[in-house]
Length: 433
Ligand code: NSS
Image (cartoon, rainbow, N blue to C red):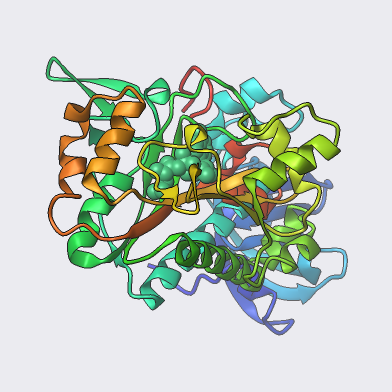
């Protein structure tokens, strides 16, 4: 099947004069009359191919001439050094087979965003987006390595649910055989149920939020990395989060430097985030800083995207905000015994204007207290019956968090908009491909 095909990357490691066979898609095409230059793209990169009557049989020079942009081809030739070629090497063609001749490719450069989104299924071939998918792959791999090394169990919770985790306003309703069901906002409650047997669990799954606000960091469907630990308090959970983020960032710096450079990502900024020990400030302190920066914000006000952006000016690495007023956070969080007006909750904000990438907390593990918290929020305890049950049978202190994978990728890859962190983003009020 492979029949001696090598990648564009490995061709560059071959000695000049070596024969090589490659395959991929026509990325650039230049017809100079006598000679034809093709830049071939495969999953590893690009390589210049040269068809020249001086060394290429006539029929293959013609095939090279006819190979349109995005045609799939298989080519054979001899490796030569050429400082003008991308990567310093080229392949002098002996043979070229067009596998699938492409029609006039609808993306030529310079198109508007709506046109590009309509053609997302073709746009995702771009080198820039391909670099993002490769970075994303390494992040997903690192998440799994991290949890595996720490003895966490990977579990598979459902996406169709009965009740809100993070407030009713952003629920997507589904017709479940005539009864309402919802697309999950978070797998947290199911993870909480699983800690009573597995103790430390994690999952990577989609979450859905019908967000009213259209911002460059919100998707309707996003990938959520969530973990939950029995016997752990907020402090241990924050350490786990920073170690996860530092580890993953380090892996990406080790494996994906080429992709980061193709994206023109300033990696010096990322270097600072390789190690855990990220700064921590309390909500109170965040409000004080925002006031110093000239905002008219009070204790008790929400810290939204704009405020977060201002706070990120003070740091080069991710940093935590902790101890939010209870009413700003979800009903299931545990109040701080030192100051019961504040929740044992934390957010991790990424620098460079990105803002919140992780939300986590210690959970209320006491049955009566949780029931009261549900009632205080005007929620119906009936909807949370099974969740309350978890507090009736061997309840323990426990904590967990959720990391927005797409937001994390947006930060690491230095993207302007979250839509480019994922191949087929769900982010406007219509579904593109
Ligand atoms: O709402 S969160 O802050 N927290 C939870 O859902 C908890 N139930 C998680 C847990 O403790 N198991 O969402 C967590 C993260 C948040 O920090 C963002 O990074 C991301 O999920 N998030 C989003 N990413 C992209 N688009 C949207 N709309 C979005 N909403 C949250």
